[in-house]
Image (cartoon, rainbow, N blue to C red; front, top):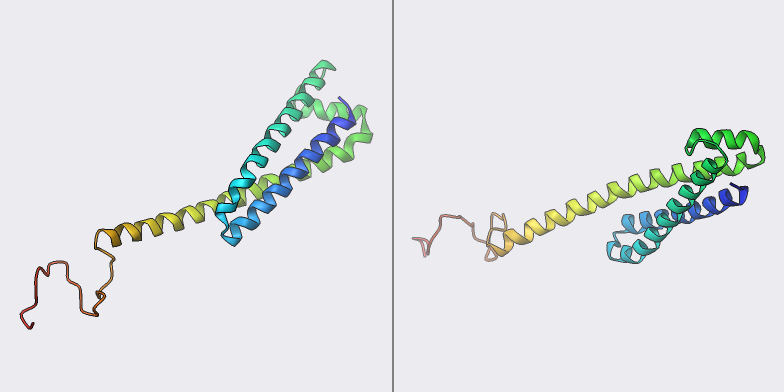
Length: 151
């Protein structure tokens, strides 16, 4: 494994974080339809990042180290010059994880609003808008079948 591999992984993670922050901006602005364009980029970056991480662990194993965080710490003990890049990578990934969590909450919020709107539209289509008064300003009563006696 080389420090260049860590730099590549850090660049990928920074790109992912940038996309997640853009996704969050769009979610906050309610521009849900615009998100579709980001999904392909996001998916591609995640795949690249996963590949780089897998490659990093394979390189650790080839050097006789454990293919996990413990192995990474052992490698860093032998290559202290890469410790700063490793910490940067970890910090960016932690921020990306938190941003993704917040984005998930925003998506749930939008989903709830959409479900609520669909429910109201469904009621309106079925003639049950839940309103007390009809378009004429008269009281609606679900059991009222015809004209009132006063008419």
